[in-house]
Image 1 (cartoon, rainbow, N blue to C red):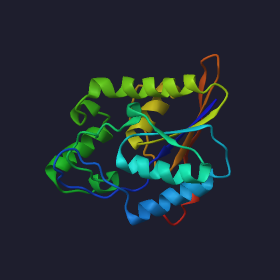
Image 2 (cartoon, rainbow, N blue to C red):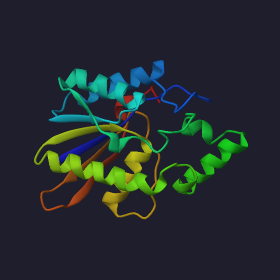
Image 3 (cartoon, helix red, strand yellow):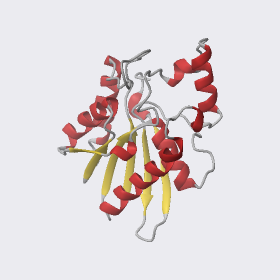
Length: 201
């Protein structure tokens, strides 16, 4: 089977929220979502799963409308920051002068998830378990999972056998493909497909 991961499109920046930050997409993010939906409309899929977080759900809805499928929520592919009270895009974290946000970025850059994730010991196994469930539920089929940068990193690091969890930066609305055989072999087929996003990143 083929499991295709799609990172959500660009979300709104949230500095402080009352409770967990769950930003919707920006206007450009909506354009990105439609671009990836159009790109994937040339392919056929048997199911679409999405993180319950708003940015993933909106991206998945654009894809599902083209594919004629319903979106199935999957808690296991929610992002590590689902309980955070802010959402600052990674590209801003890299250049911030705020000491707290600088510390957050350093922790991500150094793969210290335990310093930024409330349930760090649960995040990686949660993602891997969700990936395995989706694979086992769809033998011989093609499945989309719309989720987040951290989730995609952990899932692909598991497939590649890497010790580091956060090893690359998935672009907004990028596409990543994993082939999973009935014998349990997992292979990364593609990483960070973005040709459909020219002018939108």
